Length: 95
Image 1: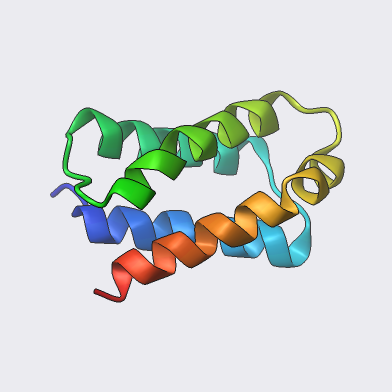
Image 2 (image 1 turned 120 degrees about the vertical axis):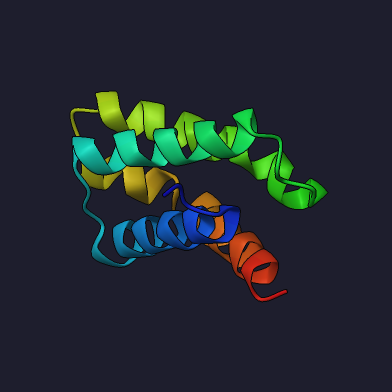
């Protein structure tokens, strides 16, 4: 059974929220971020323009995080973006 777009977004939201709050993450979380975003973009199920606009940025964040030597620094440098992404995803999932 595949995840619905809403389930994928909730999972993505959980990962981003945890990374933001705890300022830590691991390679598998960044890989999961990339897989979730890639799946949503490839299936063209995202109709919300704001959400469609931030997904490539979240994918880039996942790629950079997967390859970073300093995860806390990477999260701190992206903290404002992460908070914006969380807000946008929350608006979409609340609909």
